[in-house]
Length: 351
Ligand SMILES: Cc1ncc(COP(=O)(O)O)c(C=O)c1O
Image 1: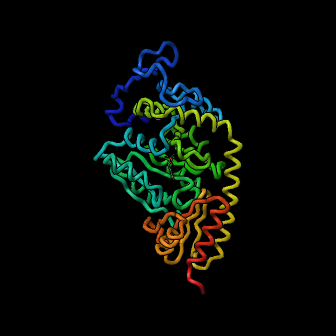
Image 2: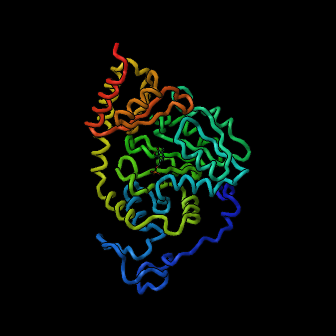
């Protein structure tokens, strides 16, 4: 029973009821908005002077159609970062419950736990950056409410093996979050088909990567209705603004364009990998199914700084668990990728 995992105060919570919960149209004199209009040009006639739909209905219908799931499974957040935070707040009692995080992985899981005073238990991923099932399950304590898995994993780039993830799902009775922020780059490997079998599974995704909409802040979760309802219960009343919602509706009519971006970025990634392979100081290139490459290089800190001095900004992941001397580069445009390789070759010592 999912309810048994929920914080008691959240179960008891009477959520805020907003003006737009009941009526979106009519003579709207219920929300103290500016009835005369807005100070800026409302280009798309979105009625920006009015609050947005708290139930995110149009968006959920359109996304449900794309994903072939029920609208009841869908929730939109201000980036998937918001959903990560909400999940912790729903299930984890501060100073009492804990969350297991296989690492290295996306840093926000720990930050969101730290903000909420929820203990984190770090478990190393194995040498191939796959979930160490035995160690992960062994790390679970009496008050462990959640395990975060990330596939493809950031910052390593690899997909998590189906078998390992299924074993976690089968054996852990708390909430399993699978962060699929980068799944568009290899959609066939999504854990979405498992959703029907596991009511404790939450999949999070984002429009910030393949869809090219990082600037409008929108992510979503796909989960059992009970969990989705809890997310609606605790979210800020109007978390998703009209400009963002309108852009997402537009994006969902342009799926082919997203697919083209994916194709292009994947082929640029493969080219970049072949270039990196030819550089002697590059000691290892991690397997990647995302729009970035993490590689081990001699004197990573120095290389990182020198690249930055050349105006090429990548990410230094050397301090992450088991990623000594590792740098992460996002796939750029063809000319950015060329510039990156040229700068890298220029700054490395000539032999
Ligand atoms: C694994 C992973 N999850 C979530 C996010 C955040 O996504 P959003 O922009 O939807 O908050 C990122 C961003 O880099 C990420 O790498």
